[in-house]
Length: 271
Length: 221
Image 1: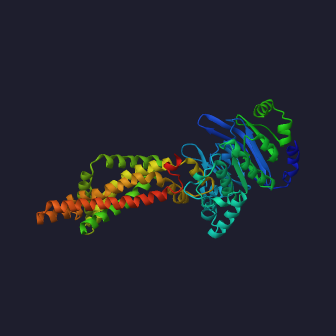
Image 2 (image 1 turned 60 degrees about the vertical axis):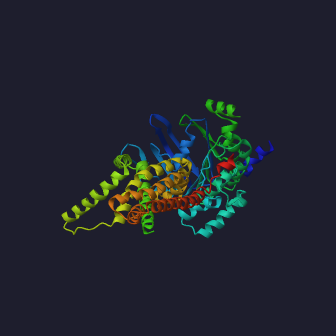
């Protein structure tokens, strides 16, 4: 009870006037016949932590992956930092980014953390962390290394800097992946179920790192199954059901006084 | 000895050319449009279906003839194509078809998430190829490519039939002149063996380096 009562006080709340970092409007995504997203809208202002929750198959990961066009939306508007991603139809009728350089530039401002870490296996941790700053953003190598070392200290992996990912536990790999995301100094961090592939005893160390980031006011969009964690760190919770936003609001309302019958049942089942 | 050097030269050149064709071919097959994919399918199927000796004769004689006909048609002088260049081109063309398949398989073996991470961080296709795809596929490609290299060193002997002076032809001539067949062919065999042994050693080093991020199977047991 103590911890839960104290959490909102620690929570960084976004100013009403903060700029909109991510804006998603009426997003649709079809995989062939399968209609995964049926018109979802989402907004993240600077400093907000948006938690997307929902059952399996509700489209929450797809929604997150559409934001940086890892999945191309079928229709809808996506704006990152106020810049709308230009989309066009290719020869097969699929929607694809119209301007490769634009999408690359936007992606390099979004720090993505994956469910399966996806560290580059032929690089040591420090090489993984400096890769994007040096080769995509054009940061000088020694500056990138100095910054990467600080980030590895921060996620508690300083002594593992020259180790290859395959020799680390899942929790360590995920913390390194968070350091890699932080190294690009992202405008927004995107987390795609960051603890779902971890052994239960390793979940805590990763959530602690993410929680610290949330409390210092980083803008984040977080897809998660960790309801208790979402309640503690999120400023806004979105509950997706069957490709639509069923209910959204501040965490106290979503978890404390849910209106929708489906959400009530979802929380009962998870809790 | 000059024969051996020529053999190595051709094998090296052909393997390099083959790797270039193979890398391009693999990417074309995986990411190219339907026309590119079909053309590459025809190339790899035909080259791998026809015996190499036949291909060498065909490409060497018909190829040089074709080039010269084209040159005279355009009003240029006929040229003598050097045996070395022709040998490299012909064997490289053959090697390219096999390495296309080896490299294609290796790229498919890369965990997809690593490619996805590269995309998610805004890497351009060229950068992703250089920094992620090629180094990540290398451990899966090395065993197959090593086979191709060893085959290439031996395939150079086939070029003897078109009169290119390499180890096999040199041996036959020396043996024919001196009548010491056993000595010369035994020496040639030893040289081929040495070439393979040295190659194996070097390939082992390269393979260990390419697998630097992977725990060995022994440790995992």
